[in-house]
Amino acid sequence: MKRRLFTPSALLALAATSVGALTGCGFKLRGSFSYAFKTLFSGFVDNSTLGNEFKRVLAADGAVAVVTDATKAQVVLEVLSEQREKVVVGSTAAGQVREFQLRLRLKFKLRTPSGKDIIPETELLVQRDISFNETAVLAKENEEAVLYRDMQTDMVQQLLRRLSAIKEL
Image 1 (tube, rainbow, N blue to C red):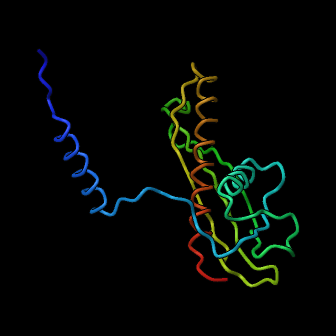
Image 2 (cartoon, helix red, strand yellow):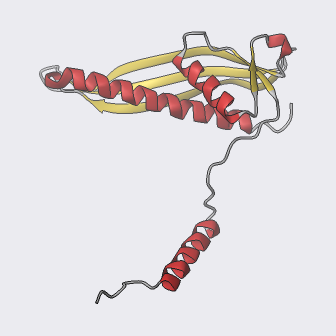
């Protein structure tokens, strides 16, 4: 005969205590964002992977419509620059590269179609370190691509948090 480690009522009590502890510490699942505007004009260039993900996330959320005419939008997201950088941060005594730092920068501002600044010029920066080994170049290139995708997702979430922090236009 097998003995149970926990009875069903003990498991229920444990689950209730865990939920109570998580809500008591301020833990809250991330829900969808709420915005002070319903339409947005996106200033990302057409072939921007960051811009495409931003538009995809907004479309999936459904709270804000991305319009193609800036005069018909409540707010205009002006993308001033979007850069990917790869900087050497570590090398051997022989000068061989051992570590890179990948950076994704976005400079933007949010304004009304009439020109009133809502969010002044702001720069977001996401960076990741990646080791390098010349014997595994192809694997490191794939790892770099995965890191850039992850950084891009982080950047979009940061941008959405900034936009949702606006309470009034």
